[in-house]
Image (tube, rainbow, N blue to C red; front, side):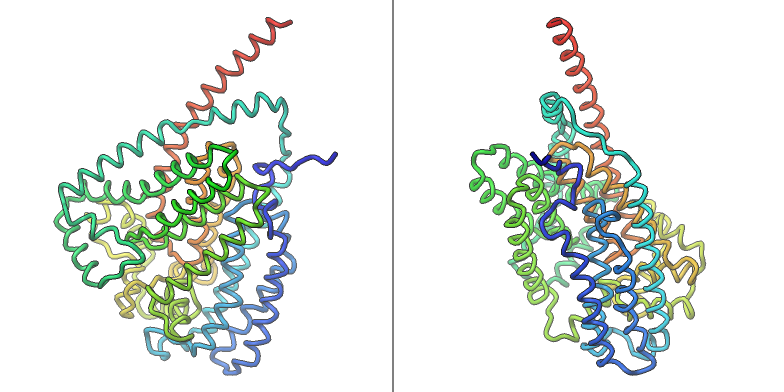
Length: 489
């Protein structure tokens, strides 16, 4: 009889559709390369043709089954697949629409493509090194299943529930103390208003709130949505006999979690993906249905966001959004222009780190490179691409360093996710993994620093405290098992 694979042991590789990712990447690379070959013949933009070509070479030699060991690595793979195949084609078809004059980015466009390729090579080399290292480790087989299953139930989340209550009480205090904070900070994705007026009003309100009150609120408010969602989803899925009922209730929770928006709009999509991933692991036999439903919901949500929120009207506006928020080559070229004309010095790297720390950032009064980038070129909300940030400080030699830092952290959280966690922590750590993985896709290093302060460190602290309690319970339980065993002898 064939042994059943342990989902915790094999993780992402046992999920339906994983084996299709490499053929899809190869297919998209070839198709987009041929399309770009005919669509773009101008010398100043010839670099865009080499993006899918280089990605094809990289994925052709990259072993997905050995080197992708977790959800984070899988998302990084998908992110680079889009950035080097579909997105460049959209940008070209959209005629390189941007918020600045072509005179600024055009002279540096091919150089930007070279930097993107260097970063991609470094990222996949790191994934390969981590994959080989993981492969050399012997996987411990589960023995004494009855004891192991009992220990699984001892995975605690008491501290998680405690801080959820504390955060909830503090948020209620802030809403009572500042009545307009609730309506200005939170909104529904389906109820649209003038976002500019709301943001101006929110910024004015924040300026009246002392930092020692607002920053804990911001931290707790964002964490609270994850904690409450995780606790509710796990709660409704405890009864294994009512699968259909569990799924319906989970969809309702996911719908409300997705529709609730804060200033960090991407968090709504992240919590939705995290719930789908949890359900796939929970109901592994039905993974095909869950994934297909999740992909359908994601496509519908993406279309809704692009049309209703991003005000997309044509392919040019899609290309502009890709460049501004998904580390496109045009914005990378603008970052090179900024280095050549507005370099602030290597010491500003430290200032960017300090700027991400609550209160300290306000006391130093420094302006982050990302803010500087938006102000110079009048691109409010746009981000300096990760490789553009690396080039700004370190040139060609170190343009890949910010992405490498993110990949190392992705690997760390992937390892945590593969450990034996309580169900609530599985969802929360999944959120952390997704947050970290998309840093190379649509964030900059400033947001990476801030994510540690506002999200990753609190999660790690909560996990460590509950994990310590879990080990104490496990130790006591194993001691009792041994006593019973020796008495029987």
